[in-house]
Image 1 (cartoon, rainbow, N blue to C red):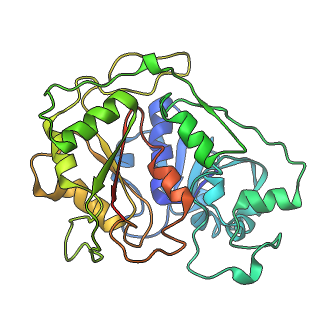
Image 2 (spheres, rainbow, N blue to C red; image 1 turned 30 degrees about the horizontal axis):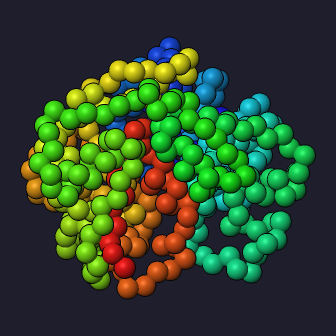
Amino acid sequence: MVVAQTNAQVDDLVLRLAEKNPDLPVGRLHSSDTDPYDKALDALDNVRKSAKAGDLTGLPVVISTAAKWAHVKGVEPWEHAIVDEAYQMRSDSLLAVAGLFERALFVGDPGQLDPFSIVGGEQWAGLSYDPSASAVTTLLAHNPDLPQHRLPVSWRLPASAAPLVSDAFYPFTPFRSGTTHADRALSFSVPSDGTPPDRVIDEAAASGWSLLQLPARHTPARTRRRSTRSPCWSAASWTAAARRPPNAPPTRPPHGGPHRGGHGPQGPGGGDPRGPHGTGRTGRHGGHGEPPPGPRIRRHGRPPPLSGRPDATAFHLETGRLCVLTSRHRHACIVVCREE
């Protein structure tokens, strides 16, 4: 059995398994909601979908969310389980599913997002049975001799980003890039016109990083109903990216060695701290020109982004969210902010 934290993670795992091994029978255990899974799964002949765990008995792999597994009763325990994104799983969620398996492999990233809870956990802070702590933290608190395996190589982050991200967010579990500076490059089909957005993009392509700093301003929170214009994301930078598509975007090399070729014009991805802003970028891109081919938006968090706010809470200053946003790229990262 495989335990993930969100339906999006579950569907992504099923799709990746089907891509890697189309002949592997996979069970997708889902809820009884009207739209419980990604419809792309309907096209996969090797995937069986059901809201009842009994219908999936005997399949080599069954995948679902921790919330759904918590409602599974009256089945024989699985011999092995994999808990994906285990650092995002609360320990009380682990307790609810622990009786379903005999052995488990917990996979996760200690430097990124912590478990989310709408209820305050101050009364349990520092205790070994804190239900709001991550599943891994609680496991190690009660079982300090559990074997831990670390993966010291990143095949996604380039050589320009791995040292910075490792030093900033992983001081106790450092890692390196699986590629060198010579393994990846980024060029454009349209030359720069010398404007600030173009200079920012050229700097990112050359060095791996650049900063686009907008003028100081306090901006009100925007909702999906009122506007899709994000106070943090610059429409000018997105337009420049759309107008200057990459010739050969860098790609993640295979684990066997570096890969020097491109993989087609998939365009840039964007990270936004707030869901409605990310949704707006996906659909309209601020209404400025045609979007780059295949843009991808990652959303992290519910409140508005820190940029443009007159105040900052602990949620806004969560370092794990910044770690996620600055570690998604494979060659160049542009950080957008405002002056103080």
